[in-house]
Length: 248
Image 1 (cartoon, one colour):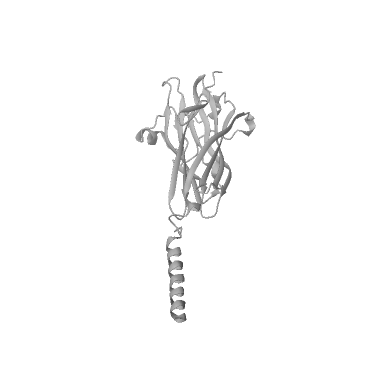
Image 2 (cartoon, one colour; image 1 turned 30 degrees about the horizontal axis):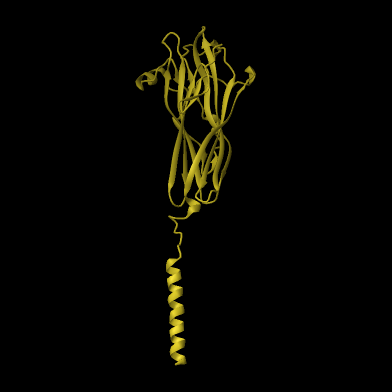
């Protein structure tokens, strides 16, 4: 009898252990809350205007790799508001780190000056700066991505009292923190450069998209934010006006 009771008791214990293990949830890689994005936030933190001394202003002349007039006509680009972009897509953050040469990737919207005398463009205004904060939070409520970046524009140049052009427009990261197991890539693209004014009095405009790609061992998440830079100083984000046009 004692042996039977012992065998019965051992069987009962093993059955309960097996049943408890079967009912205990296990997080597989594709269910781990640590690597699932619950929400993201992309907020405007501040705006400011910065006066730039003329002797500190970068050269506005297009680079040697800019498109020629014939190439612009062939590609359907309006020569009254041209872009000085060697690339139409570039990274500002790669694998969670700011790209070293980010300062050199900028867009310009300038008129064609046949004699190359860029001193004819005068009246440049201040630099307008908008600072954004982008964050991502996992299912545990832990902030896994924390980034700040600025979009900047130098605007208002004209020639012979006509036109409003853009000396530079770009996005630049100022801070980035990425948790283990996450990867962040941020790219900038220029879908179009247009003339919003007339042929005699152009108003240059640059459209820019900032795209965020978050990768974990489970899946990828992608978001974008669009900006519009106008030669009169107006700056829009996703259709909302951040800076009003300068009436000066």
